[in-house]
Image 1: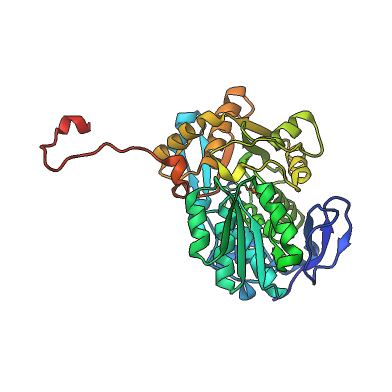
Image 2: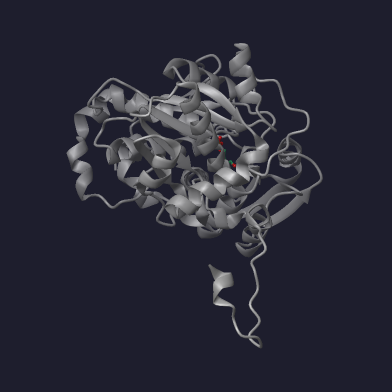
Length: 405
Ligand SMILES: Cc1ncc(COP(=O)(O)O)c(C=O)c1O
């Protein structure tokens, strides 16, 4: 298969780096993969996708590696589900959830890690390490197992237990750290000379974001190349936000979008950890790290991100914004979304339901606009956050049927 990658570009200053070798960061900031977009436009049309399997690899021209060389668990395409009942409850007519909970390992992290591990294997990497809030660790462990690569995962000790167990189950060497995800990241960096591992941290290698880009490619294809008005996305390290925006830019450049209109991108965080939102509101280029991040939505418990400026660029360019929602109401929005639509919405996506409520009340979203929420992970992975006591029935006593009503 033809590969259309031309080079890697440093996001901070445009420095060009070769794509044919293992790369990490430039000036401690991310690298982005660049393609020969005119050549892609000349070689493939959207109609040709119809006969390709429904996985992320169907967009092969816009990816750094083809499906034939991929480490894959069959990731993508996730369903894009209309949500009339939740929409009616919230007062909006055209609400959708893109349900990433159905991907391998139960979260959107499989997209990025399928790509990063595929590229790492191509470059001969034998051992990887990742700091993780939970889902990325589980996905890294699974894809590394699939590739026959050794994986080390470092997680804060309050990471949901299911994430801890899935790492171990997949054979990773998983450790709990009495600190934040950034402390885990420091362990990965400090360990490099001693352990000779490749660092898979968010935005510290260029390919996870290419995997996340497929969320935007899929969304565009599922809506027949017409993008929605607003995207609400639970933002931690920012790969999804950066990847989707990159997808829309590339699709526009190869002429596949039916309209030049792009969505207003909304980065949703909890008010217990909202560095991107605060930086957006203060008009800053980079975010200030949060001291004591606190949220049950572990995937967005990210106090500092090296791609912060890229996320802020997306919010500003798209006419979007950052929204911090009340940590204390996440469980309520979570129950509301799951009980109205049956979609196993994770606490991170529940924050987006809260953001929708707020933005409708403010009039920033019009009730007739098309709005998409990303459900980035499966509710079932958050045993602690969704725990509840069920009423019990005693088989030795007659059942009082009225009490069941
Ligand atoms: C369920 C969930 N949602 C959202 C995020 C944030 O991801 P991103 O790096 O795309 O901002 C994460 C990251 O761990 C996550 O696990």
